[in-house]
Amino acid sequence: MTLLQAIILGIVQGLTEFIPISSTAHLVFASRLIGLYDGAPNQITATMAVIQLGTLAAVFIYFASDIWAISSAFVRDHWALLTRKRGMRFSGTDGIRPIWLSSESWLGWLIIIGSIPIGTVGLLFKDFIEGDGTKNLWVIATMLIVIAVLLLIAEKVGSQRKDIKHLGIWDAIVVGFAQVLALMPGASRSGSTIMGGLFAGQKRETAARFSFLMSIPAIGASGLLQLKEAVNILPPDSFVPLLGGTIAAAVVGYLSIWFLIAFLRKNSTMIFIVYRIVLGVVLLVLLWRGILSPHA
Image (tube, rainbow, N blue to C red):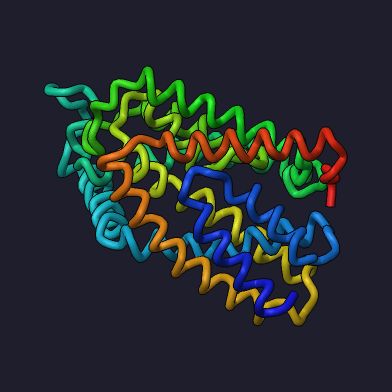
């Protein structure tokens, strides 16, 4: 892998990780176009997962104050419980969270709860996820369309009334199981989780913010696990280019987060829905006509 190839992948990763159009789909396309590793699925998966750490860095930088508030409140509230400075009882006002938890530490628990489904399924089907089947363009094209339709339904039926402070267990469960869909190529982690948030009644901006915070455990675990394995999987001369690609993903990913949150304050996800459907249909036609091969 050259530095230019890595930077191209980093830019694609940064653009598509947070925009709900599927980073995996576009990274698979990009890896084919630049001839990365001659289509070796395990090496491509390792490269994609490591470059994802750049977008994880973007989340940490963009949400630094939120992450600090959640982490410090989480430690403070649980220390107070352990030292019996607070009793464990639920709020008598909204019933959403235990009264001994601040809204910040409660959000921390929701992120943990919402991350359990993808962590469990990801470990159980790790070999399949890293294999050639998840790079199949038939699957990618189909999932592009399926999630687009589900996102369209969520836009129509979701009440879009919840702010981040109104989230509860139900939100974590719905978004958490929606995030499992992201293990399917073409689904999009952000697309799936924003869809889940809309179905749970969240405002678009709230769904995006919760989606990005939920990405921290998912992307972090995937990237760090693959980083360990990449040492044995990837050629030794690929790690300097990978660093360049990761930095590119961080810079572009930060800009993508800023753009999407600002965009969803005033707009729906319709433009992304249309893009996904058009791309999915074009891919299916090209595959049906034999112009594209489903595998690299």
